[in-house]
Length: 82
Image (cartoon, rainbow, N blue to C red; front, side, top):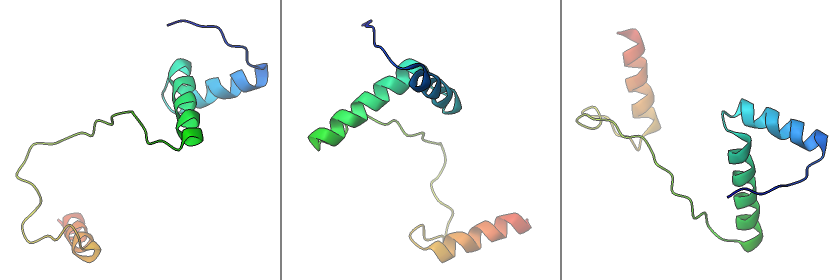
């Protein structure tokens, strides 16, 4: 749907720069801002669905406890040495 909004030149330029730096269109930025404001004022949770990327494979490496920062760090250090 199309609509007209009036913004000060300063806010418009700031919004355009922010949209560009976050790789969004101005429309997407304004829509996100309105949704966030409505959510905050209503105290509601987001109706938006986030799609997370998935990858093929067999899961985690054997003998690595993903709940242990130390185990993950050790495994990453092993990869760096290889």
